[in-house]
Image (cartoon, rainbow, N blue to C red; front, top):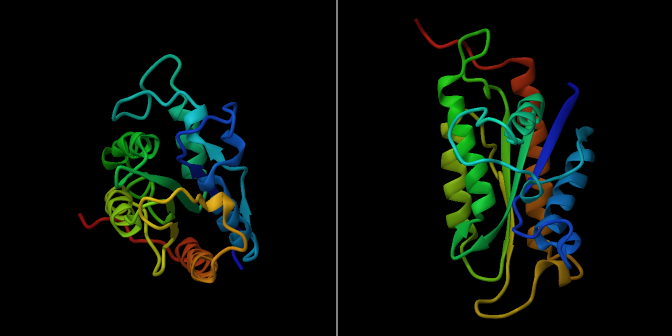
Length: 209
């Protein structure tokens, strides 16, 4: 298989140095996705907890002094597979992940040596956790945005868990992992690795003149 790499973005609102930041439910699912990808010989970098970084607001690739986005942007574009993990808040992806997507808006005006969007030939998948229904809505929002900025979504490109409405059980407290979520994670990893290898070996053509 073609050598593949992946980067995982955890969009939790909990900083690593918070009381329970190391036990984020989003982290649990992101780690499961990372392990599943490693099962397909994908080199997965340590998960990035985006809230720990200083990602400035804006829609360019560099918003000036103190902006951590340029380095994260480089790491995203260096990877073949992007995993976007997010909790559900008010039925939406987290504000942290929305900030990442806003910064990726710059990809629309940036091209590689073949005249394609800089994110061409890269695969993106989504992991969603929450205590209310809404995983389909959140994944739909993320899929649309990620495709807009040049990523390709594989079939079965989302894994998720949602608890009962108006209850307080978190995914980090669910043991064992529910079989539907485990199966979705396994499918996501297999399809992402397959598609990323295909695109790496035979990428999209240059845009027509």
